Image 1 (spheres, one colour):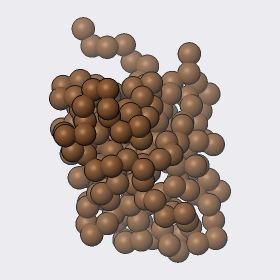
Image 2 (cartoon, helix red, strand yellow):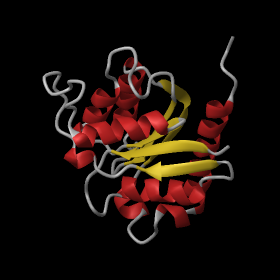
Image 3 (cartoon, helix red, strand yellow):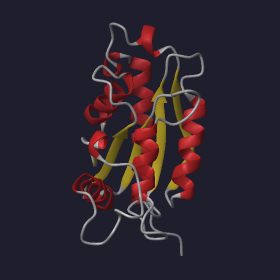
Length: 187
């Protein structure tokens, strides 16, 4: 059985280096793992309990929840916007956290990685994303980290999949997610 890993990208920009990193994850997934890149975060309305009503949940939010429910694990790729999580990714986490206590990511392994232009590679955003996912019920892999600095120059002419160091690190992240997703539940 293949482990299904859902990838969410916190950047909507067409040339996003985080999207390229997610595309690399799709290609680098080891045998027994399948990384699926979710499309459509831009279409999901901001979370509002008034519209999160059974039978009338916005279609885009319902698709996100279905994709996360069908996944065995998630990997979130996030840049850093003003020192924190991009709104589109935080909104996705909010939708996935409901219904309270039984959200689509409840108990699922989640890794947070990404790249940013700054010298720390978006580490503040990654930390904040881990915090938000943990509060939302995800099983955050706190020791699985990949924050790649200098994205604008590092990936100016090289796709992340062709950067040997990044490809090796990303493959390790996916392998760790795979391993956690296949571990028997603790008794």
